[in-house]
Image (spheres, rainbow, N blue to C red):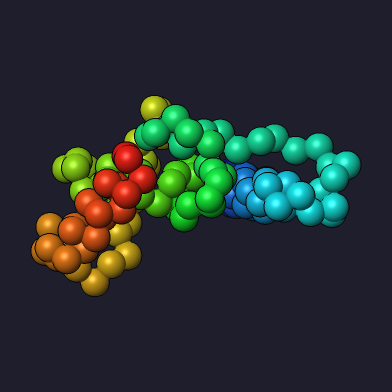
Length: 123
């Protein structure tokens, strides 16, 4: 029982650390003086398009439960085009829970919207 609690606590700390890192990177992107002298890891690129998470103009991004960060359009496209709802990061493959009232193939308007966004951003 103690080992399970320790593993859960460690996993929560990793998530909090990742979110803190994300917040620092957002502040850095906007040249906020709060993080001027702070040392922290930069965010990885979106593994699906290999571009920086914070682009100009800034795009929406999605954080999965496993703490991996993607451009929203990239992860939407990945989920629509694959049969598995799992994190696309190599060696992660944690399940992705879709929090949408429609299934991924039931909403033609949602799919059309995503296709339009993909065309707009040349993805």
